[in-house]
Image 1 (cartoon, rainbow, N blue to C red):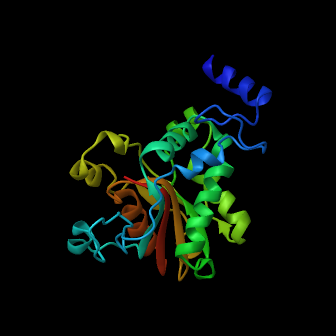
Image 2: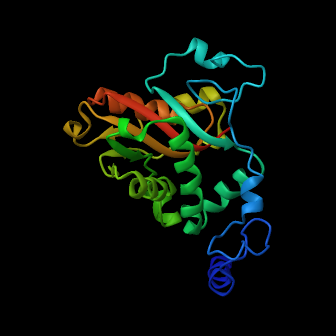
Length: 233
């Protein structure tokens, strides 16, 4: 019933900000610029590998100093707090945020990575059960938005999830690493051979999902793998 009410509100009041309820600057956007400006963006002083903020400076966080990842680096819009956290949680329930969040991802990508280095965009796959229940995969929606802007193909049916897992947010670091092990597979390895891939996801906490995807992609011939996410937690 609540979803029906949400649809009616979106139809009757398309310019109302989904976060604060104010008029969204007279444009057809679900979130106003005032709320967008309150996002805790990650700019300077972050780990060059995983994008974790480093208030005291340095090139790498303690985890990346002792870990050899298969991805080249992760890029994130901001910290998983405040407005950005609220937007991501709402995006899991309503797909109308895909353009607003896609724009944030696009700006972050443009600033931090030369898009000409990328051959394909690959969204992190959801389990069939979770995608069916939600009605969409938010990573696919974001990947398609980026694809339209930088004219790179989305490959969404080749990297697949082969088993259901416990949601990562319910687990600690050690449990996350074990939980995501051997979850992904590639159908057609030749598609990724000698290609540079950017993986799209909403949140990176331990980077275990991005790492597992990178392992599988490189095992199947990918040359380089980058991660692009909305938030670092």
